[in-house]
Image (tube, rainbow, N blue to C red; front, side, top):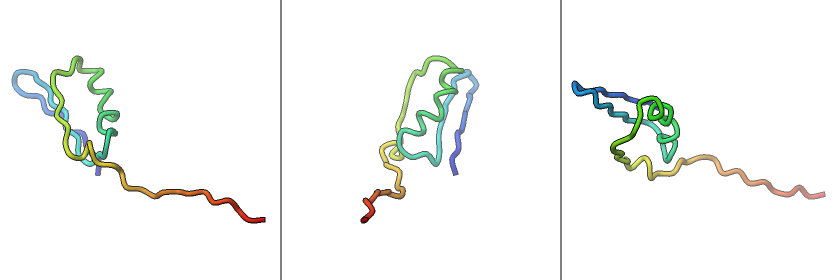
Amino acid sequence: MKKIVIDIDETGAVRIETEGFVGKSCIEETKFLKDLLGKETAQQLTPAYFATARGCVKKHLPLCG
């Protein structure tokens, strides 16, 4: 399950954390929040960012005849 967690501390600092995303999709899915909240001061990438999505590989084969 994909989840975006937003944590705001007492000083007003905002932390955005994603769970369940693979690869660069976490960056794309949180872009709207970064645009709303302003300048990003730090970024920490998790191992999931560097992973690749496992999916079905489709190959198109020419038909005979």
